[in-house]
Length: 185
Image (cartoon, rainbow, N blue to C red):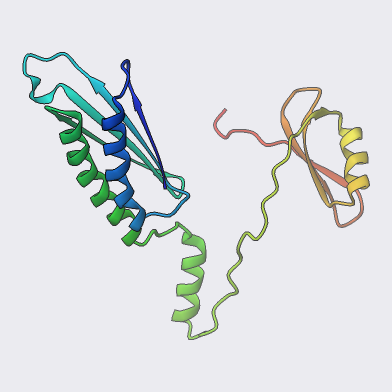
């Protein structure tokens, strides 16, 4: 786990930085090396000095963000307080199973089980993701590019109206064009 300690509008003392890094190292038993902790220390002017030292923590775990904040008389006391909060949240996050929403697939499986079909339908899943830049082009150019790639469909931005369009090959060999729109407009 990587811990970054920084001050908000002031320089952090080396002793406070070392203290925070040492304390947050105890989260390594829960988290892996892909996790990051950003610890921000700041001072606020209050009538009471009991809560003038602010410690804010942003913890990134598996792409999800957990935040914690504490106000105390010293930064070290604030670090101790916020560390306890963030550690509890991190443990809860790691232990609770995350259910991904797949209602169509779950309904099909439940229906198959209710019908007595123990095998159920083969669950489809996304096995590959491609990301690419799309550039404006005319429909004819998109058809040529689709043939060059030997694909059955091609996503492009139509140069005439600057909207996303999908060109696809029909069963009869001709081409079809899908122009998505937002419903209700």
